[in-house]
Length: 183
Image (cartoon, rainbow, N blue to C red):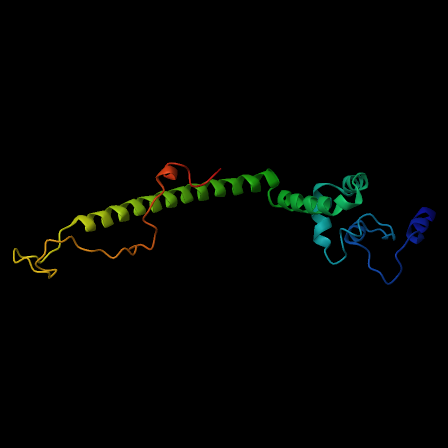
């Protein structure tokens, strides 16, 4: 009974302050110099609960004591993220999430490559279409007379040089076979 009273009275934050989430979960008084208090506030009990479930309070305490103060916040954020991932997926944890994201990146890169290839195909098709229009004789020309009217002259049709697909029709031949993305 004595040891309980000693621990209960030593180093409390006062009666008005609420204990941090770690001390609340561990059912102990929160000291003024509590190592957990800056990183596990009382209004976010879920953060410490998942970290405690996966890593254990003593391991988190040791880790935080070994780290310089300016790295502790990042370490706690990483532990919370990994603990939440491990709670959601007990077998793979973060590795499962990373693998899933990598698969999504691979699928999206393949879709991007297909879209870029389609753009090149459309540009080439559009350039061929414009070249074909420029070489086609004008219709409606009847035959002789040598007048200056466009209907009687064997001129080539003039084509509006605005792109049909609103894409640039000129292609840089030097970069045509280089990849459009980098892995």
